[in-house]
Length: 330
Image (cartoon, rainbow, N blue to C red; front, side, top):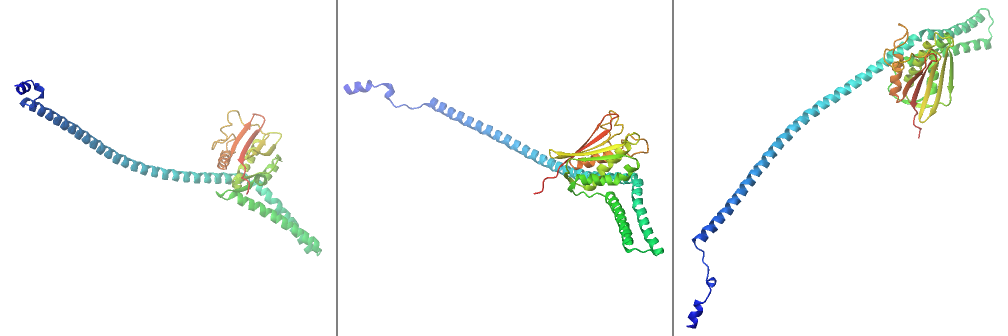
């Protein structure tokens, strides 16, 4: 009886639990829900992957289109660069032709003075040789005197040859090469070209040099700069009582400054900035081409320098040229 009572007194929870049909149905529904959610996640991931692949394909297409556009742009850029280089070369060639034309025009203006300058040594040569001929004809041969007359004639020949050589050097096309150039020698050679022109017009020229300076450039082109400035000053003082040209040179701060000043009437107010424009001139019709100062400006700029004009009406005009000094030799 005690054993039977003890068995009857056991709690119901102590018995073994067995799931019923409803429990199995709930478990199956839960598993199916999880499987459905897993399938949904896979579907979403598949859609996301398809979207990524579509974006990747579009990106690839855009990259291909951009590559084609870039290749086309590079082709256009190469053509544009070649065209720019061709035009720069053509412009440089035209500028060289313009400089040469201005140089020949300057030589044309100097023709009268050059003729006078050549006439003097030719007359002297004729005089010396005539003296020798007279001595031969009259039988008064003095070897020492004959030798002296012939040596004097040879000196005049050398002088005429030097003048012609200088004109030929100045008239030929200037090379594009650069070399160390003495500014003082350049100015002296320019003065030698226009000396007779200035002398025939009773123009006084004064040159003040503090120190000589060396720049890197083309000696012929730099000579043309000062020939242009001197002929411009020559015309500026043509109608004034006191005809004078002053040239001064100073060196400092890595540059050489050369001032060419005239005693003319000066440049009219408001025209200072236009004097360097091509074909602009304040001279009478037929008295100038308007290229001299424009060519001068271009040459100075090509040599890394600057040029400016300072003028007050009635007080003459001064052209200031600044050129960088040549680097010291090692």
